[in-house]
Length: 113
Image 1 (cartoon, rainbow, N blue to C red):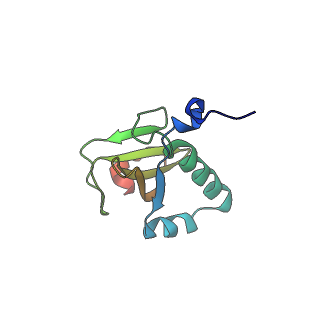
Image 2 (image 1 turned 45 degrees about the vertical axis):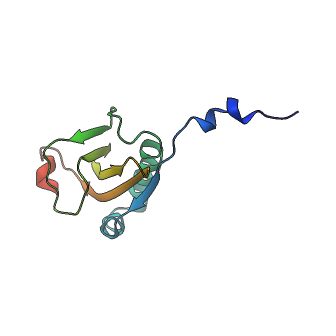
């Protein structure tokens, strides 16, 4: 039996390459291994297919000027008490993760950058 690839759903799903800035490696070293795994799993699950679609845990940050190099607009992925900041190159299908920060209750996004 042969499989017709034109009917395969895998051909319809757009997969983005996820790149991490050097500063993200430092950010992740400050996080416990338990939380690090949760964050990395969420990045893979949430950002590899539709990183620019607003969702329950994903939003566009309007008028945010981050202290790192980024290609506007900047997006935020909420993973528990952590925030993953990223931007997307749509044409190349690349997600650049720029920073990961812990966001304590009562703090604004601008205050944790």
